[in-house]
Length: 470
Image 1 (cartoon, helix red, strand yellow):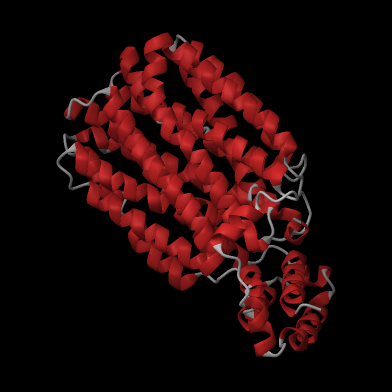
Image 2: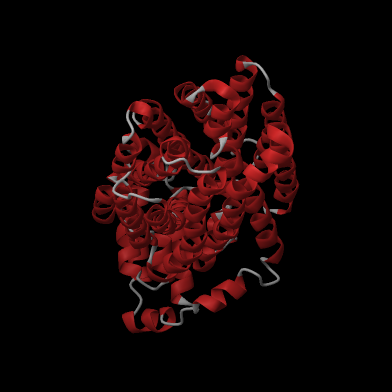
């Protein structure tokens, strides 16, 4: 029997048999805080664009360029980050990307013109784009199968925490003075410090370690998780003594001759082979479907939420008032995630994702045709609720549909392809607004949501299944 394959199977089974432990909470909260800081950075740029339009006299096209160049960096970062995560590990890439975009965000606070700001926003995008798919892959590889979807939606819910923080900063800091946007960027530099905490404090994925033949390290990580399980939870899977005996019984199996394991692990697919593999017949349909969903959701989400503050300002609400409306709209993200986290293990991935996407389409049309303040806020909150719930389901399903050797590559390239739409959307929104106003613009977003909802049904359902079944 192939020792690497057998080790991967054993590690996976042991991880899937665990209850949710203190170690899981540490991985989830540590990764989630990084996720929240990412969201804060992305959210801040929508407020900063609105402010710089007034302070620097930027045109809508220049404002769209600031957003789009960041998404260009995210597209490249997501693609490279996924490849690196399969090559050198999840944790290293996670920490490195946080450091890159945190430092670039802090440097953005010092710029004096558009050209330099565009350069730093591209660097921010490189780090941010690589981090998000790697983080979801990393957490999914620790999560027990029966609650994996729920855990990933909870991870994605940290996005709402970060986006809410950006709305608070946007409301209180950005309009406070002419240099308020600089202080907002400075606050966004916090991830540079947090990257060191991540690098030193979180374990590497044992599934990835086992797939690379690093069996002793994989077994050590799993044993720590097993030791952290509550006694009553351990008993449910055979008792504390049974779990300890099972751990001991596998030590001999895991301790294969080092030369044998290393020889097999040394056969690592080059990047071009991993890219070809996600389009092999076994994965072709799911890859096409997940790319379509990522593309459509990115276009509609970033087209809407990057421009909502500016659209409200143009509607005559004023900078501070429009930022206040945006804060209210943002708060609806949290219940959206909560409902999606519950439904994803009840309904499954595909149904939850498609329902939230259809809800996003209806909310987009309602927002585009709303005329009163109450209608605008209500429709915006509904759009926030459904759209971010859909994001949670999307991040849950993406890493599940590929095996460990391709998981980072598959998730990263799906996200990278989606970022093409996030590059185009901020640039196209001013054109669509000029042609048909908010009504036409949000109708276009609704169409993209509906296409994504249809594509979701071509994905493979992995509710309650082991990641090894991908």
